[in-house]
Image (tube, helix red, strand yellow):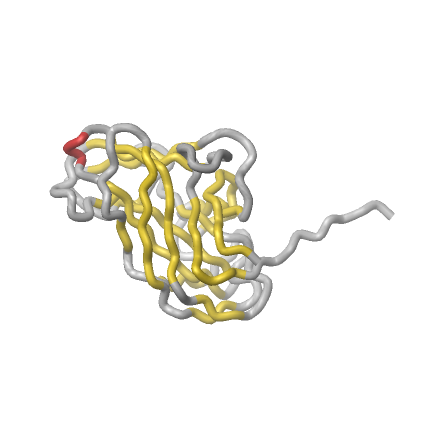
Length: 201
């Protein structure tokens, strides 16, 4: 059982609705070094976070759930990021999806939104700092093997018009309270399948 998932760099396959690579979410701090996601900003809004500016959009997936249950309550996204210049007028937003059906690592499961797009109330600065956003979840019935999927977006919030530049999000950090500590925290516990160690006979 766990209700906090850290954003890590390992691959979890592909999204069921798009070709977006799914990275993994872990219940413990990741090993290895800090990673970054760099996203191009324009005069648009709600731009999916990409691995490097303007290239491949990204999403994260939890491990498969252990059994049938209903997920509801609230969820908080906490991460560290920055904008390239003060007049980018940018923060981040996030959205949660229920991946059901064929929800194996590379399955073509159906994805259903569990909340509206939710954004931080504080604009990024030009140096990395922590930002958070919270959403209320629509109740969804999960079955064994289903997953929770997270997508992040560049978003103007109430900061003015977004201008051309970039935002950088740091993740895969292994130190509490430091840049790169990125996690999704649920108010309700999410039961996960346990790994079984194989031993030589």
